[in-house]
Every structure is written in structure tokens, then in C-alpha cells.
Length: 356
Image (cartoon, rainbow, N blue to C red; front, side, top):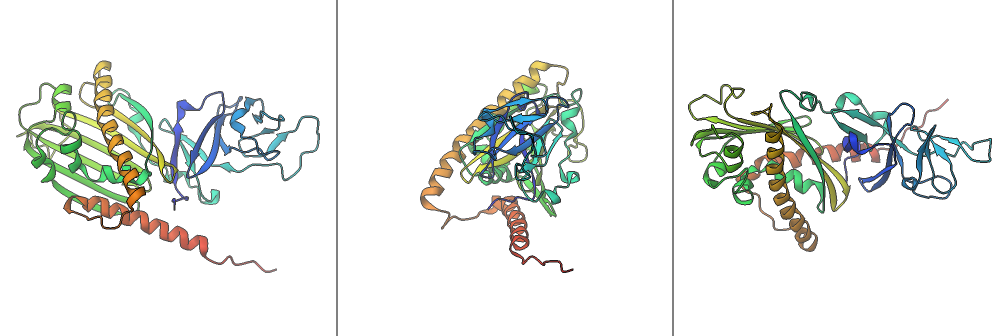
């Protein structure tokens, strides 16, 4: 079961232009487009109410999105505003419209009850708007796994030592496995931070910030916001600079990552991510090099979780064992299950009819 009353990333804002843009989210076929006059993005069910034709085969015209089969036009609210050769529009000629909000370079979509679509619940990510201090580059991957497997992956950073040895992990598994970790569950998910002190910097860090010494104090900070978004700040300073008291110092390595996991189907998802350079901000090549390093690591993750998905589809999860490094993942899963339980109970509650 997917959490429906939540904001998911539907697309990067630049993906939706002057043509219909189709994407399946939570097993629902959706088409997005920008109004020809205002430029505002809208999201509709990808199914014309006339003959069931997918609207992705249509075009954007004045007034809305025109069906490519018989020319009916629908506005961003899902109302049919034009039927060729017919003056009267039936009241039933309408589509489901999804709340869609453009913010911080994302298009956020609400998949549940539109009456509960509170825009104040959308994550703030101001780093996408601070190009001077945090120049960034972003991407979206289509991944053949349930989106929660990627959330699991981000909740247990000990895998870096084994999956990402040549990039963000390094060759010192002991430092990653024995990191000092503090986990704080909260109402929307959890926060956790890991410290690896007096350890060698991983290859990505050294290539990005050659001035780093041979021993660093390294951190990984994560804010998980259910159901599928993780804000990350990672970096390192030379040992002896009191990084635990002040991480925002010049001369080290620092990056910010946004991870947005949006379910497509039960076994596929979209992975929206961006990486921001916090160490050589005036060098565009440094931002590109960082992006390329991170993309190598994320494609390594992609290979792992896609294979994991196939195995779990064949065997199920019976007999799997939790270990100490699963602490954040276990808290995350509890938060997700708690939200699902509340949402399911509300959906199954008997509806009270008003009496005159």
C-alpha cells in the first residue's frame, strides 16, 4: 500500500514544458502540462472522459490540454472547457485533477484526498535557490525496484564501505561500520547523524578537495521525511579542526544531496536527486566533477537494489535478519507503517451522513 496523503516529486520543473508529459505515480497514470497562457503546471489523469484515450497523445492549446483523438480540451482543474461541434458541455465531462505545486525546482504532486493537500507540508529546500553558495546539478533515474528499497539503502550508510570503495566509501570499512550514530525519530520521519573521526578521506573527497589532509573527521547527516524524501549534508574537515563543534568551516569538503523517491508501481520507482558543491563554488567544473562522482555511486546502488528486488520477488522477506546498522532503517519503517495504519483506518472508517 502506498501512502496517498503525501507530497511526492512528480517531476523536475524543467521536465514539463510545452507538450504533455506522462508519468505513472503510485500505479496511477498521470499527464502534466503547462498552461499556454500562464505557464502554470497542472496534472490530470491520463485518460480522456470521452473514449478513454490517453491525453499524452494530445497537445497543449489555448484553454488547456487537447485530447489527440476527438479534440476535447481540459483545463488544469480537470474541467472540459471545449468540445468541437458542441456548445453544451455535459457536467460529467471532467477528469481527476491532482494538486500540483512548483517549488525549489521540483513539481510536487498530492496523490490522496485533495481536501487534505496542505502546501505548507511541502519540504523546504532553499539550497536549490542559492546558486552562489551551493551550485548544483540534478538528475532523475528510473529504477526497477520498490521505492522503499532505496529509502532503506539511504538509512544504512555502512554499505558505502562495500559498494562504493572507489568513490564516496573508501577502503576503511571499520570507520564506516563503527561510526558514532545518533538517531532521533520525529513526527514526520527521523533525523540521524554519523561521525567517523580520525579516518582517511574517501577517494571522492580527496579528488574534490586536494587540500584535505591524510586524516579527517567526517560526517553524514540525514533528515528523512516520509514517505520518500531524504535531505543529506555530508563532509569532512582535517582532524583537529573541531568539526563536531563547527562543520561550517572553509578548507574542507562539503556537499548537500537531495534524494526524492517516488513510487511508479509496486516494483518500480523514480529517483530524483541533486548534488550541491559546498567547497569550490566558483568552479563549474568542480560541480560537474562532483555530480559525475555521485552518479557513479548511485548507479552502483541501482545495480544492487534492482537485483535485490528480483530476489525478494522470488523469495519474499521471510527469514531476513536485522543487524545493528539497521537502527535508522528500522525507525524509518516504523514511521512509514504508522502513517499507513492511520491512513488505512481513516479510509475504512464508516462515513457519517449528515441529516437535515
